[in-house]
Length: 211
Image 1 (cartoon, rainbow, N blue to C red):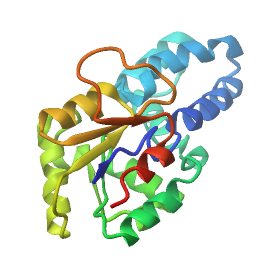
Image 2: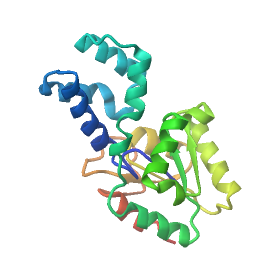
Image 3: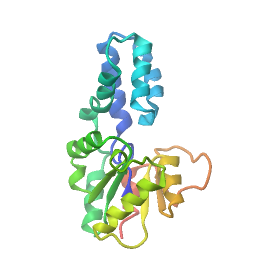
Image 4: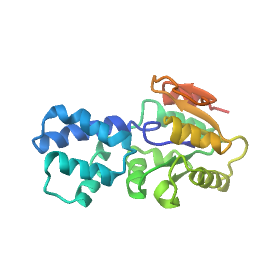
C-alpha cells in the first residue's frame, strides 16, 4: 500500500496554520493577514520560493528568500502531529503483513524529519520523497518508484494509494493503474472518476484496508 504523508497521515494544515499565526505575530503584521498567508501557501503545493517572495513583498521583510524558504520548510515541523488513531492503524497493517510505503512531495530533509518527529517512520516500510526521485505527484514516475520500493520489501498483490488530494494522490495513482482510497476530510468529490473507496477520516479508511 502506498500512502500520502501531509494531510493524510499527519495534519500538515493545522501545523502550518499554527506556525503562521506565530510568524505573523512575531513580525508585527495584522492578524487578519492569516487567511492571505494560508491561501498563498496553497496547502503546501505552492513552491516555497514563491511563497517566500510573496512574504517579502507583502510585509517588506528585509531577509533573503533563502532564509524564508528554510523557515517555511522547517519551522512548522514541531507542530506536526499524526491524525488520531493513525499510528495504531499503521502498526496493525504492518503486523498483518501489509507493505506500507509513504509517497510524498517535498524535500528529503523536511519529510524525513516529519517521519522521525512523529514516530511514523518506524511504522512504515519505506518512504519515497519527490526530491529524491526527481518527480512530484501526480507524475507517474514517483508512483512507479514507490511501487518498486514496495516490491523490494516483498509487497505483492493489488496495490493501493491512499491520500487526500484528488489530483496529486487519486488521479495520479489511478492513471498508474492503482486502486485508490480518498481521505475526504468531509469534502465532496468535485469531478472526474472518484476513488474506489473514501472516508472522511484517515483512520477509518485505513481500517478498510486490513487484509
